[in-house]
Image 1: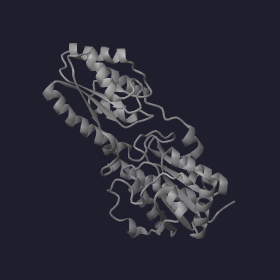
Image 2: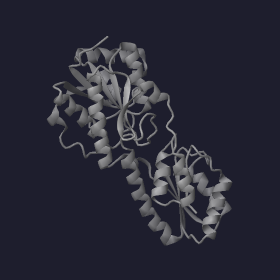
Image 3: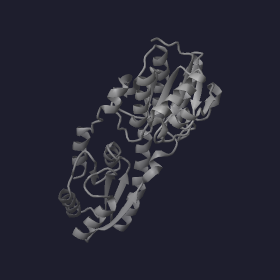
Image 4: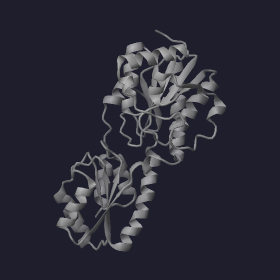
Length: 328
């Protein structure tokens, strides 16, 4: 069934990430460029169920390209996981005369969009927004580049203290299921060791690496740990284990937490968001649906939502090799 697109809704869902506002701006202004109406849906799928809509025009998104977070807010929606909740959402969209949807978020948000599309044949297009960079079908998700720069800046400052006091710092970064942030920032900040979920380093190898660092003359060390790393139950237990086995080290833990999600998006994320927003709207106008727009080999590319959800974002093996060489 071909649908003539006259009005597009845009929402942000899941965890916020720098660049979401730039993507909202891109969607709204692309709609304006093609004389298509656009509405912002507040608080993700929950706002869709409650009819929390607002008309948006080109001027309504001025001065947001540089802002972190999302002006449309974000929320988890248990109601949208039910048939009744999705039915209310659909009825609200039809009442507001919305013909298609752009969903900015991660795999959970895309799963909701795919189910909604299958149930109602409603045209949807996804834009990947998560700092973890764990979505299949794109080399970069919105917010990833900004998060890398935020983490490297923080580690640089921590190293000043580590060097001044001859300390070993465990720096925990986000990445429950993927080690992209830890691996890239670890290399970029010159970490002595990097622990990620994809590679089980093991406690013995970690101790051996730290002993080698000590023998080579390093008086301080930085170990970057993804929060999903499997080597210990948590970073604090890992700290205790190292102190028990290497009492010569004064160990400290720094958990960077949600500061990684905040801040003004980098130029890269702003440009990426602008490119993906344009492609999302134009693809819907061309009659395409149930895709995610992403970046592959610096070209904007469409990936079926099902593949984006079920596919696995691989860690870069070459970067692992580089990390091993740099930590000598």
